[in-house]
Image 1: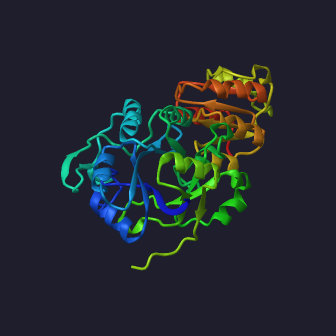
Image 2 (image 1 turned 90 degrees about the vertical axis):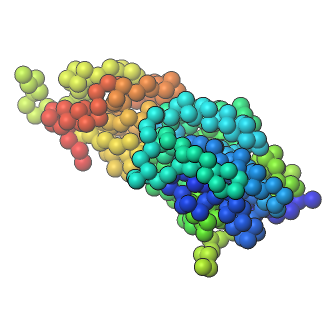
Image 3 (image 1 turned 60 degrees about the vertical axis):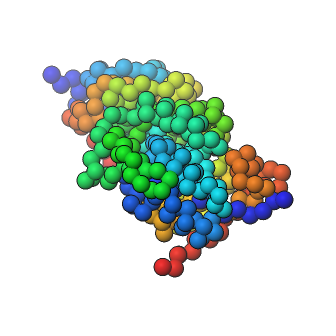
Length: 253
Length: 122
């Protein structure tokens, strides 16, 4: 039976230097449960070193976690990549690490990059700066994700930086993205008025949450169960699966 | 020694010669005169601000640069910093008749040299 699943497929943990210290596995899951979010994707910058911890923390909870990475391509475009298996995510991470410049993170400028366990306890720091472009092209990333049976799509295409439209002018059609992501506060009609060519894409809206209050409930997947294959069907608008988008509402604090 | 003729415009040939650029595509257009220059690596910014006939200096080598150059009818693109230009970019540029140069020199130096030759922005 097809049911609505509220999803936020773009969440940062304390591994992302720009994320707040509250973005630990347990607190992310508690917040998702309290907002009645059914599906989350963990997508740190160029790394997946916290995905297993979040998946473990969600064991027995009513929230499904997809492991993922927000890759920065050499065009400085952010691409969200999501998998059904943490090992595949780590496979992509391997390719990223081979193509990430070896720059030491400066915590006082960018923030700390913390690897934690499922309880949110500190394990170690990732010393290598994650917040920078890899030497992989968008095409390289799309190809690798396809090989690994994952899903990928351009992040926050309405933003003036790190977006495929700002950096490359338009979305290269030959990439055949199944979907595009807009920011949690973006107005979909505002975007379509300016970019008519986007009307054929499935559009989702994600929180790009760097703090707990930014978890977004705008995107609803109409699917049978929270699996990657079902998400793909919803992106393709097939077999009765679909994606719907709620208007942005400011969270009451 | 300044070989620039009085009142003459700067051609792609003169730019190629003085900046020691390698020409990668659409080699038959060296007589084209440039109307000025623009430099940016954000393609949306180029689309908004570069003008017809401008020569564009960038580190981007994605195939989309060809579409932008063609859309705006730019005179040529110089890819700086010794970036390896994607095959798809080169084949598309041949198809769309867009001249692409490449150089190991930096954007800063190339823009400086162009400015000195009388190629200016705006």
